[in-house]
Image (spheres, rainbow, N blue to C red):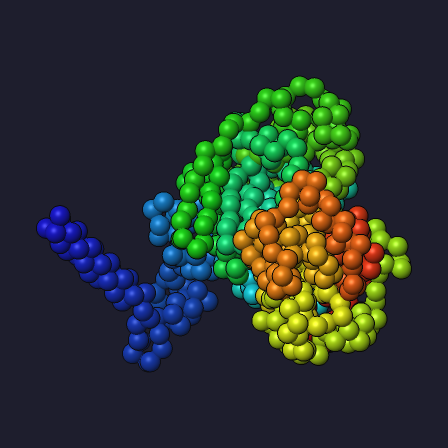
Length: 591
């Protein structure tokens, strides 16, 4: 092998030497020769052209022919993308296809940011950027296409500015209205490929349907927490659409959002770069796209896993054959169905003129997409913003932030920041010591936010009892709150039962230890005994209970459960911790 490499290197050097010799000879032949009078041959030739009969004039030479460019790339393009042109697996022909192609990116956030930058850097001809949101400071740890200087600017416009600064030769379309059922199909059909960089179920179904209705390949990814996933829909005859795999939408409670669950910044970066890679492969006609494959990424272990997906479903309400659009609408509960799936493996550049003849892949038609109610189908809003405020409690059971502040101060809760005391349900004022649950404070403060949010910041003296659902809160936490709110004989058994179920975590152990010192220890009650103990504790309530959450939604549901258990004096903070930060403590961070 070493001998073969040496022979090849010698041949390369010989060819380079030959090329240099030919270039030198050509330069010598083209160089103007000096005439006896000091003028050049070029000047003499010009004089000869004016007077061809003049003796000794040298005839003019024809200019050398231009370079041959079978791939059609210009000099700037060839030089800019030279490192890709040198790849045997890519080359000038693939680059030319990419330069003639177009792609639409829906969502200019954590996924769309790296996808847009790398597609522009790779040399895509035209790029559409669609979003409806504005840049926020909390975006910048992962949405690297934006900057502090552009905080408050429209995301699509901010992304376009960054792309233009990176590669001014890319034609840009900025769609600030985002994607809606009314414009989705018309928008998608203008491009050769679509990248789904959205963050909510309604947009995923909408974009998938539009791709199926227009025959457009769709590269879809998701990232939340420390995990990501990627696949290609609507590519190839057997490629499934999103509805093929998920005919029914997930429950809203099962859809984690970055704003609530969090996300490690580089994770969407990795997935967005992989989306750009899949788009380049499809548009340039190289490699094997991830159609019928789901790529999973575990960031904490550094592991990539590929799962094989089933083929396109013949009876899919969106891309299946037969039945018509009406049947698709009936199957999905509306006038049209949703789909997202792969369709073909060949290069698709040049199809984004808006007048191409791409056909729908199945039942779904553009008019069906426009008529379908995706929010109603998924039970979610088509954005990653805050959920709509709930109104389930009457006004007299809700407190404004300033009123809660005054009540906490009057009850001796909120004067300090004793987190150890808070973990045990004790007053942050440090005046406890009687052994009562909640220390000597005259009230109980319950924070039902997730433990991770509670760990970032909380109110002094608060006990963290996370609210997942009404059922889980009822089963796991109501007994603890009853015990904290009263000092009667039935409370110790209730608290012991709560601690036994929860292992003493997140407020249970504190309630149990605080009430246990009253001398009423024993086995956790069950069945009728537990109900009787709960009724006794509710009847003996001696301190009011205040419940807080992030925005004032889960706190209302928790109050409902507590009042159903018999507590009378229990209230929630209207607007949650966001209202507290806005009205009481502006220095407190808002997550």
